[in-house]
Image 1: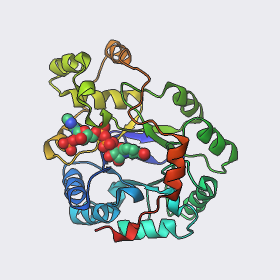
Image 2: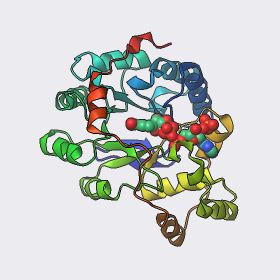
Image 3: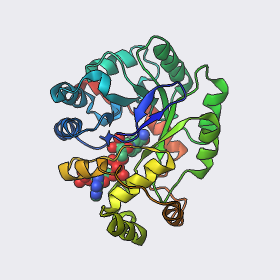
Length: 281
Ligand SMILES: NC(=O)c1ccc[n+]([C@@H]2O[C@H](COP(=O)([O-])OP(=O)(O)OC[C@H]3O[C@@H](n4cnc5c(N)ncnc54)[C@H](OP(=O)(O)O)[C@@H]3O)[C@@H](O)[C@H]2O)c1
């Protein structure tokens, strides 16, 4: 597994498994399968309601804790709860988190960022992340933080390549972690001619070509899947390399269009949405 070095010296795998919209039972078996088949990065979140299942899968896999890189996210409803990180650790059954994100720039995210900095200093988290903090939000964090974030997790795929954000992240040495890397499974993205053609050339599926593109762009990528064949395929992308011309050809399909359009109203709703995280299986 290729690794990438973060701005604090911590190394993390460039590819892992995502667990958004995957219920507890499926998440436990998908993560357990992934770990047994070479994955070392798992992405979850308070709001996915599967952190306990991820914790069980880690234990069950038998893979040593220090070999696994776990990223999770605090939901805005816990931003003012001083025990939010302890509760997250408890659900995951871990004693540290490799990368902890603030999931959304909603609620009192400035206070929550300070909570992450404190946990970082105490060694409870090894890297700090912000998720969906594009535009003014990342600027605000960079202007006010004591410890710079190591990673920002945002929507990225060949239809939306985050050109504006990359100007900041390149300058600040903050790595981009791509959500919806496969367009959330959108067939029109997977069926683009360029991926069909390159798939034939390299004997890979369109999804594998897209994931290889992500890693060559310098993105950390976490395709979500509960299908064992896809989980195997998604990791099998390091035995070929797209040429510069092929990367340029893929760049041509960028539309600068997202699948998910968040509004200010959504941010207000996120701040008041308070699931009972302890009720998960
Ligand atoms: N920070 C945020 O706000 C945020 C938002 C969304 C997502 N995320 C994170 O990013 C991860 C990835 O996003 P996502 O899971 O929503 O979307 P995605 O990875 O772009 O796409 C997942 C979909 O693609 C399918 N798929 C996976 N591998 C495939 C393959 N090799 N060939 C064909 N289809 C394949 C999956 O179905 P199968 O199960 O059948 O494989 C699933 O329907 C999430 O799981 C989560 O960890 C974060």
